[in-house]
Image (cartoon, rainbow, N blue to C red; front, side, top):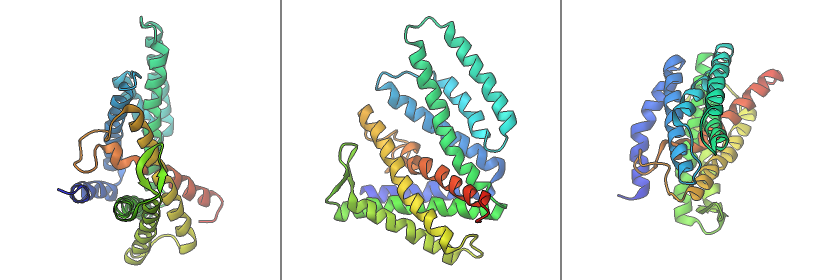
Length: 271
């Protein structure tokens, strides 16, 4: 089966489930995000292991939960995070291992990085009222997915000039441009088809610009890690896509950027 067909079929199965959870919001969406973040953490841990960077897996996964919950329960999550962090630090002190601190740094990086970035999606979903949060999150996801599909198709059909040859030789400038067009196409369709779209054109255009820039940056960040690990996909969980990290790499960068953008507009009384 052609690679693009695999990607589309996998997306048609997984996307409705994730979008339904996004629609429900609340604790359903939060729990789904925590599970996805934990799977991505495991994939990253496995990649780092190929670089001889070992991680205390269970501690990374557990510590990531309060990091994610800080987006909705900051005080309780912070106390839980501190308690777990102290346990990890004290246990590491008494471990008989020459590279204990090296492993500790890797453990903390994995524990904090993915949940912190992924919490941007949770923050965006909780922006404004329930419907506004859903529409903005839905639009972000559709833009990211459209960017990915059109960048892949456009790069395959027309790609000639490498975008970042030292990181990902297969990515091209032409694919990047097609992906950018996909962002604006998805945004335009959402604004036309969704009744009562909560933002105007002047606010929406920077939203697409941010997504079109930060999404590919997240993709390249993962490509850099995979290249260092000597692998093609983060895992084989999703046919045509690889692992969940392969599917959400762009979201990890674009979601927190979008959340920062909208909250900045809100606090500046622009939105």
